[in-house]
Image 1 (cartoon, one colour):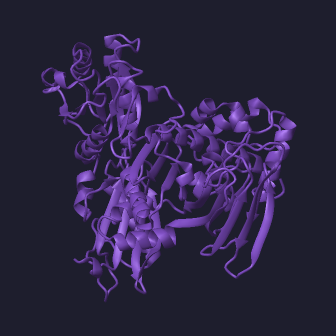
Image 2 (cartoon, rainbow, N blue to C red):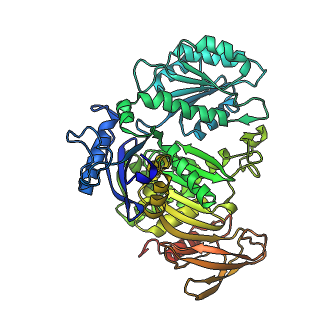
Image 3 (cartoon, rainbow, N blue to C red):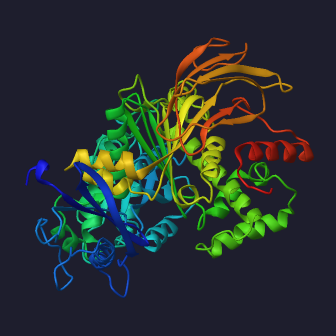
Length: 603
């Protein structure tokens, strides 16, 4: 079937807990989302067949659409779409992270060197790192063997040793893996994939130690010398092995593959594909964040280079205690505009962790939850920036000195002054009671600089659209623009340190109707000018000396700003901004921001 003949498309995303299905059809020459349905994922007992959850979600779509998509026995899809009877679909595509995504163990000779490099490689490939084994991690061999057997990862990354260096220690790690005789989490009777990315001189001995015990694969050394880190070959190989070895053994996966028209893609990979497509088609730089219950994924495209990171310990339910512990009480509380007992706050956080499906019932609970979301996003973005590094925008390498440079100054590809669009996704952002709250969480967490368009994925359709783009790019782009993204507005934020509420900038907005709005703004403030979705205004900004809109200190800036549900948000709190040490003063200033944004009426 040619692309021009496609009229009806079914797409699903099999998540760890929920399988989501969407129906896309061509109406009046334009592809649009028609209905969506969902059902529990059925990868675990008693069903143990991921396909059943898919069929259940499609049955809901069928009912909502008011037409038949499944065969009479409910076990297959009617294809192609019949124009006369209005039955069936033309193509079916799917993504999957069922079974908890990719769970890995990594090893390195030295924990703070090859161990850290291996961790960065695994995270960049979209994995959850369960543990890091190293020769100097303080554990005895039998404890390491027990740990491998207990965790049952999907894959093990074995690294260590520079090329031409000592081979004894990395071979010792291989022997520990061999002694553990590891069994995979999914699938019975198949060999666990182990990827070797260490000293190339040890390859033959590694084959001897592991060749008959596991499904061994070999790639370039991720730390070829003490001064260099080369992660990209390892990342690409991990993603390939995930599809070939892990997903193909998930319960019911072979049946699902028979139903789809293109290979099933891992969910994070599909999201990355749609973001790269949007960046390329629009010619813009993009950062996206998907905040879930257990993990937060951050994606970026800068200088045409795509990067992805998975922060496995930062989420809004299962991992919320980790967020609280990592961020610290002070950082969470800085966003809460009222006095609160520390024990009360800790109890609220723990309640969310042990009752992950609950939602806030009081305004105070909502404010605390959204404060935690800011910190989860901030921590995840910091981690992403340390991973998204490049050398002259081509080869992803780092020198050993960068490992100790937490700011990654001059090395990170993520430059907020160049950022055009920020996309938020995940329940706490997509389902916030007011869109202003979503915009505020994104601004506070990412602290965008210059002119940045703020958007949110309404129902997290990006995975399905990512895999759809491989067969019908037009449909994926059309639905992404019209039905997936909600445009919140544009953030205008100069960089510079604010002192004593001094004047920061003068601006003039030329509205679509020709009206001109001019104002002088002081530091430490938030101001909103309404500008509707689809409207574009011309902006002229004259920053004061010490403040930069992207052209240099005090230099004027002209450009365009896009409207949205919230409008144009002028953030003159400075970059970086600091809050007063006095708690009463802090509460007052945070309240003034929330009032300016109309976040919590009645607060």
